[in-house]
Length: 189
Image (cartoon, rainbow, N blue to C red; front, side, top):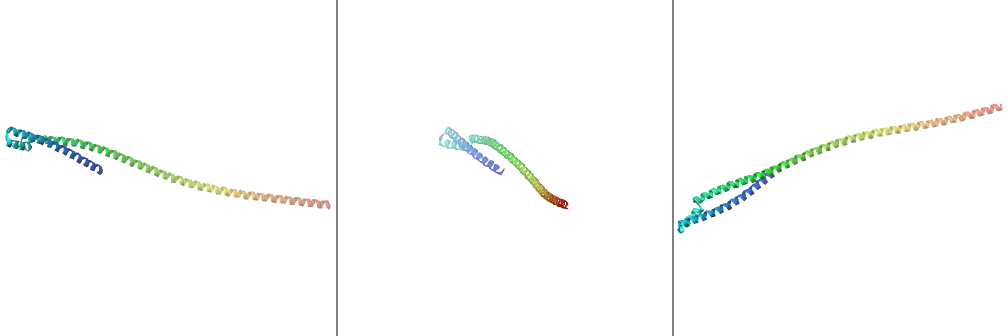
């Protein structure tokens, strides 16, 4: 805002300088006209003194001076009006630029806020998913441990069953041997 005000002041000064130069030029032109009118008037009065008086009257006073002052006043008014119009245009232009910049700033702020919100949501979701993933991992590890234990138990059961079957077979064989021995003794006896 301060920068825009400085720019506006600089522009105002430039325009005022230009208008002042124009005014001075116009006044010089008008003074020359006044001097010429005075000289002419002096000639009409006659003689060198008349010329001198005419120059003085034309350059400084008389009706011509009043006309000059009126013209100067008119010019000043015109220049002031022009200056006001130019300044108003520039001021409006600056206001529009400021409003546009203000709108852009607000839009940027809004977008930043939305972006921050989305980022926070993403972070929360990420954290939630990580926790969920960790929980699943723990559950899977637990299941794997259970499966491992079950597998070990099964293997033990199978081993015990095999041992039992082997013992039964051995017992069966011993029984058969005993029966055979008994049969032989009976046959001999």
